[in-house]
Image (cartoon, rainbow, N blue to C red; front, side):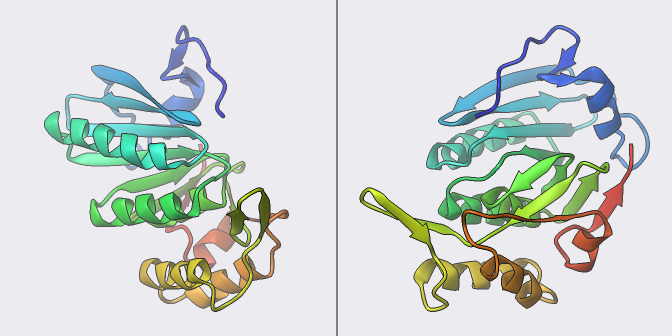
Length: 219
């Protein structure tokens, strides 16, 4: 769960010196200062939302991916549309969570034309959401995507879902084929070779080669 930080000297909980660089992603110019902003909490984390006068909107996802994340994101997205946002960007700061909701939010990113950005660690289902972006930006040297097998939970026991004919695995493979068709099998292979209690981190140019990201930018 993301730690709560004070707003003084920060832009939605993100230090001003860091968000200024993130906002340069339009493509290199600084965006105007947001005029409205809001915090929307969900089980496991929060969304931080800002809207500027030129129609640019930034949504920051911080925390664990849960069913409530998906539910609340739909409300945030609805608010963005009501405000007339035309250029939506989602900054992801999560170590993962629900696989099902990773699929759901990843598809939402693609169908609604969102740009996704990672500037630190984005693991497991967070990576699926990131790959849903129409434009997918790895921002800075600390940006990395974590891949591993899904974890299944039955009653009080959990185990790695590593059977190729399992429903979750089939859905994962189809999801990757839909988002990144040319490199889906290579990424899927990395996922299946990494146990659910381990993590394979991918960063920099490698994410471009694997089709996970479309762009790498430095501050």
